[in-house]
Image 1 (cartoon, rainbow, N blue to C red):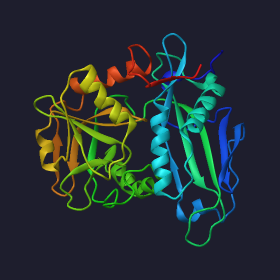
Image 2: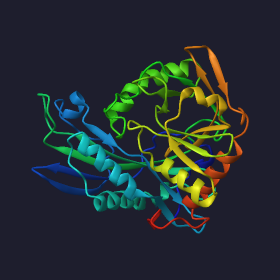
Image 3: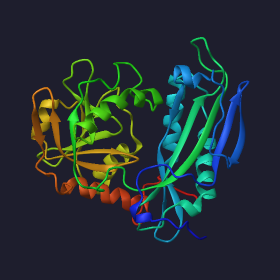
Image 4: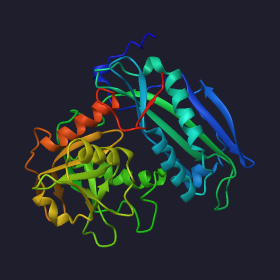
Length: 343
């Protein structure tokens, strides 16, 4: 199978229209599978619920070309389960795990020519999304829903690849206590857009959000979880009910503990502790693991500069990242169930 003629090594993280996407519709209490379609556009009524009450959720995942030429995805069942949790919280119909995985595999298989070759550093980003497509003017859930999976070849999420980035502490809250921070709802990201652009205008790659109740504990960034390495080389994982349970974070933590022998500690992390950490990184599907060199606190004007610095990724973060990438590309053996072969 011949790949598309793209400059794979220099792709940015953006949308490129590919040949196929997979679609299903929910109405009258059941799902109807349209399967693969070629039209990249969706036509909706102006009264569709998603436009007024933001009834939408999504997932992010990737497909990879392995060294021996196969195409695989990474733990799609976990994304399916997370989308189910999002749907329950948003009063949306729950898509069966098998249907979700089938949709992902068919989308990737149909767009195999767009999946970057092994060794280019690029991947095929997959976006499953569900929206309230039915007409709804009163404040209530929609009666019809659209589920779609599409994909696009992408490069690194942050410019510079794994070069450390700078963050700032946001003066805004990402999620309310007992709110929707633990699900992947579109409305969470809409709320983060203004603070994110404020961070960019100030010269920072992202925001660090503190807990909304006390503004004492670290939660996550606008689009990724955080990890830390303390002075004893323990992997510190912030704990909070409003943090999105990242599939990538869980995988990195497993790799750190079971492949690299690190001690993993999941707990609340006070912002005041960060000055004593050796390494900091944000993690998620898009970025995988991106090292953080410093965090600026606008409230005090002070910078927290991690010993790993702004030039190179820290040694522990580097080992965890490289090991996970090797698992995803099947260069080393994966835990059972992590790799889903497409073709």
